[in-house]
Amino acid sequence: MIKHMPFKNNTVLKVACVALYLIFFNSSSAQNQSIQDSRIIQNIDSREKMSLDGLWQVIIDPLENGYYNHQYDLRDKKAFYKNKKPKSPSDLIEYDFDSDYQLTVPGDWNTQMEKLYYYEGTIWYKRAFNYKKENSSKDILYFEAANYHSIVYLNGKKLGEHEGGFTPFQFEVTDQLVEGENVLIVKVDNQRKKEGIPTLNMDWWNYGGITRSVHLIKVPEQHIADYSIQLNNKNTEFIEGWVKIEGSTESTEVTIEIPELKKKVNLTTANGYVNFKIKVSPKLWTPDNPKLYKINISTAIDQVEDEIGFRTIETKGSKILLNGSEIFLKGISIHEEAPYDLGRVTSKEQCLILLQWAKELGCNFIRLAHYPHNETMVKEAEKMGLLIWAEVPVYWSVAFDNVSTLENATTQLEDMISRDKNRAAVILWSVANETKEDESRNKFLKSLTDKIREIDPTRLITAALNSQTIKGNGEIIAIEDQLGQYVDVIGINSYCGWYGGTPGSCKKIKWTNNYDKPMIMSEVGAGALQGLHGTAKERWTEEYQEAVYKDNIEMMEGIEFLSGTTPWILKDFRSPRRHLRRIQNDYNRKGIISEQGIKKLAFYTLQAYYMSKK
Ligand code: GCU
Image 1 (cartoon, rainbow, N blue to C red):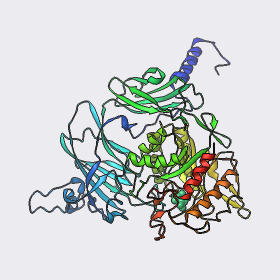
Image 2 (cartoon, protein in one colour):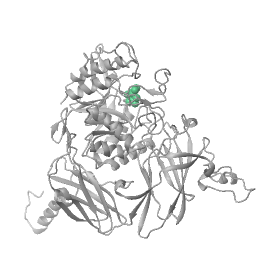
Image 3 (cartoon, rainbow, N blue to C red):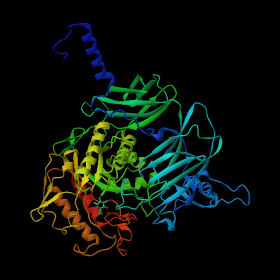
Image 4 (cartoon, rainbow, N blue to C red):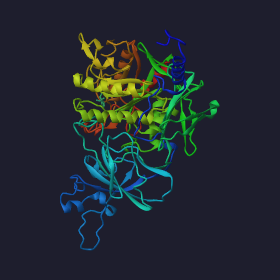
């Protein structure tokens, strides 16, 4: 329109100028992350906070006796969240947190008490803490994660509920807190549900409990609630993003400073938000040089510091380009399970052990399966130069035609993206693992891919499929799954030599792909009991596993559209589906390292392959 009627009169000119201004200085350009109305505060590491970790009093309540509300007086007395104490010796209160069991938070309950090893149900957690009120500050109760369904009470009042075992949730509690002793009670239920995410069946231990840390975060009333800072994927001369100020609709002065790049910009919010674009060319983040820049975001009364890397990620045909150059993703899959038999990861040290094993393997990439791992794992991987595949637990036979299941999956996806959107190392969002192809599944997963394109068009979308079609007498395997059209990168789980074929039968297989898109072999591997030796024909021996690796590596080398792989899996992990007592003993034995941290032969096979690959 403008081209045909330039300068006809001033109004046209004015409109044109405003449009130009919006394009360059204020509005978010297409490839930037759209402003999210996130449910969680960004980057709690940078916040003043009181840890509520440690020993919590618990009541194990398989019949949810302490829950049901006020139909019968008696039941009211049993409402555990009221933390009632007998008022007189004749008073009947049939529970008492303070003389009951204790569990450590963060931590799963299954590995803390023999009698809870298989337990799926409700446990009530109680934590008392002292609090000193401060004016003009807000208090946020922040759970890094609790599996699976949590109901949270503070001083007898219900704050709210959360569904999903692997993403953070928070409650603003400024008005609920009292001076002195406060009592926090959390009902955690890890029962699996058909309509849940994940659903009833999964090949990992359903560790229950408050599995990650709990914090009481203090922020000014008007505070920096969220922000996105990234390199423009198309024009790397610009860093761009947005900042969201909570607690004020007035315009607020916000400063973004990148000291090392001698950049400082002053911005003004409107309705609590401001977009920005900074002309600067930072050193790019790469696996060999995982460069992070200290960034300060501040207002007159608040400040947040973060360490952010800048990189571009895209696909070109069947290639994945990092910073414009083709990269082969040398990866490994990892479950968030601590080494040495200790259940869910609960410390930075445990994260570092797993990540150092991946580095030792020669990896530049990790698949964090099958759910969002803790934030420390993501941040430490980024510092170590490991690119990341992050995933929501839309796993196997999910209730794809159930609307609330889709809402639940979408919420988990949004929260995963919200928490880690500033992590340059995260390059892939995965929407599913091994889901049967049909119309409701395609619709469900398309809706998730659309959601990602809406809130984070800067990263690649993938899913792990096992729907490949075997053709001829198995010498051809074709990727034809409909979902291929909605993702940017196609993940394939293939167990040639284990769930089909024999070691030696895989190398000849030819792969075809209906899509001109990169493929990642997201799972490949075999089981072996560490220390069990024999011939490559004997299952469960290290030699058999090694042979499967050698054979599949040769097969993968023949796939021209292969851009990476994350063999299954770094470490043996617990699974209730692994019953072969003398071998598996509740462990999936496809690790190339045992649960006791001992490397198997296949570890060195994969290491040699990665060392040989550019
Ligand atoms: C599947 C699945 C994994 C599982 C693995 C196995 O591919 O994605 O979660 O552990 O197979 O059977 O070992």
